[in-house]
Amino acid sequence: MAEQIKGWDRNQMAARAAEELQDGWYVNLGIGIPTLVANYVGDKDITLQSENGMLGMGPFPLEGDEDPDLINAGKQTITELKRTAYFDSATSFGMIRGGKIAAAILGAMEVAENGDLANWMIPGKLVKGMGGAMDLVAGVGRVIVVMDHTNKHGESKVLKSCTLPLTGKAVVDRIITNLGVLDVVEGGLRIVACADGVTEAELRAATEATIV
Amino acid sequence: MKKIYGSAQEALDGLLFDGMFIAAGGFGLCGIPELLLAAIKDAGTKDLTFASNNAGVDDFGIGILLQTRQVKKMIWSYVGENAEFMRQYLSGELELEFNPQGTLAERMRAGGCGIPGFYTKTGVGTVIADGKEHKDFNGQTYILEHGIVADLSIVKAWKADETGNLVFRKTARNFNPPAAMCGKVCVVEVEEIVPTGSLDPDHIHLPGIYVHRIIAGAHEKRIEQRTTRKREDA
Image (cartoon, rainbow over the protein chains, first blue to last red):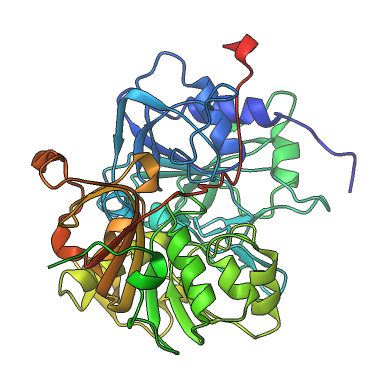
């Protein structure tokens, strides 16, 4: 493979993903880069859901203020806000399954051109479990994937079809990677934007999926 | 009827048997019934099937029962950071049933509500849907999932009154109410038992009808991932 094209870093990807969120939305952010999206919502009125039973998730606590009864879905200590509401897991997934959450931003191991998503296991190697990801991708209004465009071997993670067990079938709406932004449309993926310093030719070359 | 017991061991007396099915509350290490899990370890009950979102860590939560090989099967959604769990699964010693987290919560809630099955879009087109009934509603495909009824529920709440009305605290509520609802018998551990009448009836999270036995005790409440901001940054 030719020299690695860089494009956006983690924070720039998170900032680009934050542009997707609209004022008034209730949103679920996954673990990893999606968590950073919260730092870039600016003045928009966004309420973050944590699927372990909370709406209105606040930032990490100040040192010494950690509360073992107050964690996010990544098991990290967090804080509450004035608007916060707590509820049980069945209610939490009721609002997810019921389509009340406007969008989920989550990471992926692989995404396919028809919107298939794989992010929960590698057979024989890694058993993480799907957690709430299958419920989220099946239930929320809009599914946005944020991930590196290629794996550590330089191979595309944006594929014609996924090789790993699926988290959801034809569920992804938009893909944001270090190289650009792609939408899942009829017949394949459509380029929405290239990352800073990345040409369309470079984005196409790094993508296995059909670009229409 | 007296619901308050002196210890976890007393509260579980006569309820445990080999091969039984236990539903446990908690998410990660948050809101787990740590006192009751320790008592089940001490009782040595074997071949247990657990329905629980996670399996704890190696030395806390359900992890302590994996170390003693008391668990035969886990119905769960996420492994977390449990090396012993991974080892037992990959070597075939432990049987696993993968459940999407919301499906697991709804299976418990439904089982407790007398609903034997429900249809959900979650997992359609994935391995989760293999062998399950598919049905279309309004042009969308759903799969049939079954309600869970457990032999025993073990849950953790913040406060109980003497009749078993429960109040939970912050995100420690999580799977505890649905787990409590789906058990034929439900044993609850709390940080404090308060006099009946001292909880605001409008602020009860789970009514005492679901609760059969209660114990109070000190909880370790371990933090799995301590994340903070520096005070000078605030």
